[in-house]
Length: 239
Image (cartoon, rainbow, N blue to C red; front, side):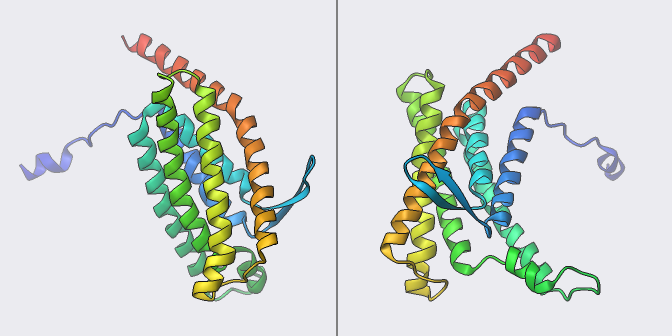
């Protein structure tokens, strides 16, 4: 019996390639956004002029593209699982980064101080990003399916733009307030910013994210159509 158990074939999981690819894209974009957020971007927008946004803004926008595709193709439960598992990957990233920072550098290494400055996110930014992530990403999945139910499955553009626009607003407001108001005031971590600066950061970031959400809509349509056509053809061949 023990020999049979040892030589038994592993259970085969028939997981669609698109689900694996979109999940990988979600996690890759998420951890990339965390790593590159130390750089602040100066983006010129019509009317508003130059706005400031974290370096991870574009990468983080990709996570909403991936989660909307996952929601549309594989349902609410799967999308929420990806969102919440990816939340845990944030802690894996932080643990690996800070372990690397704490390990002594060898001769010929990049400057340890510069390495820590770039990758060692401050506590207020980490706290703000984690809280904003949990709230905005879960809201994105909920809003996407609420709009889907309301429209009887029609108007993909509406649920994509509606869910992303509202979730990006949640993300922007929560991150900015937690990182630059709540954490400095209550925990003494990071620098508190004046109200006028907080409002400017929120408005500028949100307008930039909203533009990205609008550009993202045809990409969601294209990705969903491609995956459905590919899976339909694969099912036909299999039959």
